[in-house]
Amino acid sequence: MRNSKRLAAIRKLPCIRCGNPNSQAAHSNSSRDGKGRGIKADDSKTIPLCFKCHAAFDTFQLGNRAESEAMFDQWLVRVNRMLVMEDREVF
Image (cartoon, rainbow, N blue to C red; front, side, top):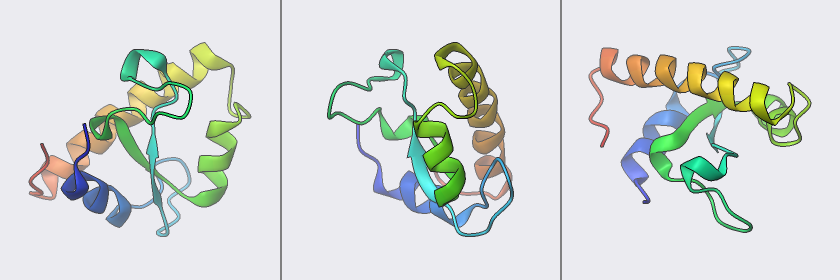
C-alpha cells in the first residue's frame, strides 16, 4: 500500500541511525513486509535513513538478514512513536 503522507513525514525526520537531517524513506527489505523482487514493502514499513545508512542497510553491511530485520523492527517502533509525538497524521 502506498501512502504519500507517511513518506513525506518520514523524509522530514533525521536518520534514525546516525541523526543526519537529510534522510530518505527506507522501506523494509523483508518479504514478510511485502518486499519482493522489484517490489517495495508497504509504505507503513518505512524509516528515515540518510543515503549512507540506507545503502549500508540495503546491502546488509549492518548485519545479516535476521539482524537487519530485528534492527529495522526496533527502528520502526521508534519512528512510529516519533511521528505520533510530533502530532503527524499517519495511516
